[in-house]
Amino acid sequence: MRHRKSGRKLNRNSSHRKAMFSNMVSSLVTHGRIETTEAKAKELRGIAERTITWSVKVNALCAKDSASLSRDEEMIVMHAKRMAGRVLKDRDALKHLFYEVAPAMAARPGGYTRVIKTRVRKGDAAPMAMIELVASAA
Image (cartoon, rainbow, N blue to C red):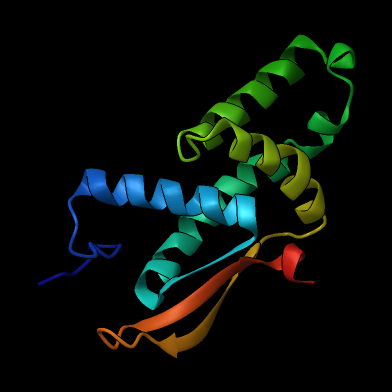
């Protein structure tokens, strides 16, 4: 029985899942939307939301000039970047997240992504879905 066991395994071991979701979040942040299977999109949503939340929390501090930040504020920003960096291994995607995506999402209290069911894949009849950042779609 799978009682109280959260998360889909997606027929992969844990290191493969972690690497796959890291790459998918990087692509989502960089491109604004990606198409994947419905199960992967639903599982990716939570990881992407958590990562975006780290950048949105320090958006006001990132907007300030780095010279005007206090030592405590620098540490808060550094911590948020390191926490988001645990998921986003690509430095360009991390910069894009903190300096372009976070300001666009700053007014939102959550719900940064949306999953839209698109089609059934021809080869294996897998249900496909588009996951996109809400601000980039508007």
